[in-house]
Amino acid sequence: MKKLTLPLVIGNWKMNPQTNEGAKRLATTLKKALTRVDGMVVVVAPPTPFLDVVKVALTDHKRVFLGAQNVHWEKLGAFTGEISLPMLESFSVKYIILGHSERRRAGESDEEINKKLKAVLKTEVTPIVCVGETTRDKSAHYLNIVENQVRSVVGGISKAKLERLVIAYEPVWAIGTGLTATAENVYEMRLFIEKILADAYGRTIARKVRILYGGSVTAQNANLLITEGNVDGFLVGGASLDAEEFSSIVKTVSAHTHT
Ligand code: PGA
Image (cartoon, rainbow, N blue to C red):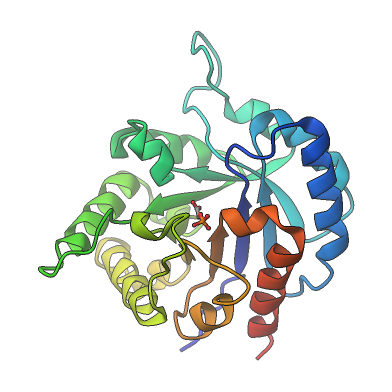
């Protein structure tokens, strides 16, 4: 049965491009390229210093929203180098990526991600929490890894709040490598994550949580991944830096919502 959630494609620019001018150019090209965005939501998550210039470039695009790549759980204080939710909200950020594997690799723990998630869920901002195994082993230990990540990250979140959550399944071995999980792998993991949530919160709530796939998504593989992987959209890294390619991924998802 098809889920009734609004599909979402998010472009994670990571630490790109190098200049404010470059960010402005990319966002301006993107605004022109993103013509077919019906029945879904598109999010652009640039590096924090470029939020303003990207915000201005995307003004008036009704279905494209601003995202951030990280946030601190405290609102203000002595946290050198950190960025708070009120700061991001003041730039009209509507989505925040939490627990990306590149941040986990730099030391971010499930406990910290859980604190960040709780903070974000106190606001109107939508959290996108990343989970995913580093490698796939024959004894399927990777399933335990993903299960532990999901359980730890949502710990202590109420039913009412959980339905606003978006989970991005991003197998680390597929990120930036050109290797993608098969559509079958993606579908399996989608069902698995939904089951973990259903066990803890019940089926109705679990079905409201959007589950995305991320890891070397391109204009070429997007169609198969969305149709047979049965996900609610994508978290796109490398391909989001190319306006034509990103908009082609968006068009694929938009076309899928109308079939
Ligand atoms: P990729 O990155 O599309 O370049 O593999 C995905 C991500 O890190 O979110």
